[in-house]
Image (cartoon, rainbow, N blue to C red):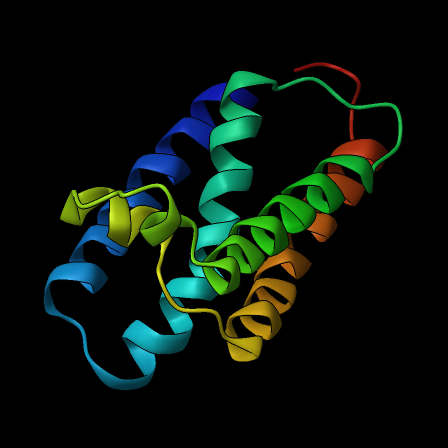
Length: 126
């Protein structure tokens, strides 16, 4: 049941992210998209790994660190250094570093930490 819920959330968030990418401007595209992307990553991983992880804070921390790494790769110019010209890949990976993006990831990961904590405290079945 948990896998189904996270799978549905993943599809919903992916749809929202696509709509943001195609149609949104201003703060929605600049900030909300970055807040939601870490939640999307979390729900995807939770769809694949629905059972409890030993420590409740591990998975969100890994996702947050992954997000930081991707952002710092943008600072390094990853796409340009590796000659990535495919527009879709450049959008997914990103091409511009921003400390605001780092802050948005930190905000977005909060519900993921809360979810993990509640999963840890909840019933033992999946």
